[in-house]
Length: 262
Image 1 (cartoon, one colour):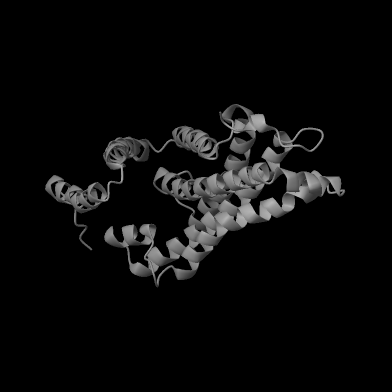
Image 2 (tube, one colour; image 1 turned 90 degrees about the vertical axis):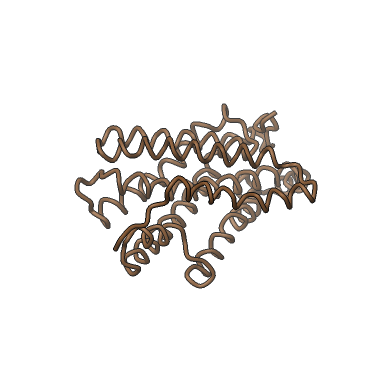
């Protein structure tokens, strides 16, 4: 199947799609035009640079280089999670990095080494894109879970203290907030999974089809990746809630207010 390449002129036409939303935002006086331009520009520059870099990674296909790139992805994702969750990077970085890297790396290793079985086993063409999809979705889920969990306890501190005064342990007192935070992160993902194929055609599957793969092969990869993404999302969020909980409360069971970013 022939792959249709997009020319630079085609990409210019793609950017013209932004004219209508910009007109509407200006008309409604929504002051995000500068943010929109900066974000689109950053996205374009970053993706072009990453595309060039990945070309060399795929050609070199070194195990050490692949691991180094995955570590860089984990570090950037971990910083982003804590900052967007309004939590102290200094206090939580090590434990959230451990929770994030443990679950995503185990799932990646099982999926690539036991299911796909590329040659070589650390083939960058499979290893890095799949890890990027797993990590990206886990990152968004962790932001929601951590922000919701700690902001809810801070907002309802009297209720939280009352639980403990009635005899609840930290584990018992935090369980309702953990459930609420997990539901907030997992419900949209479950909704996406449940309607996939009917309401939406996911990006990975569409990309493979446009790239020349047979639809059934693209569908099998998409199902496998979605299962991996959901598994990683649940594991990383639960791990990070349990790990950060050990740091976030003092010996009296009170939430430390210095865990939040100033």
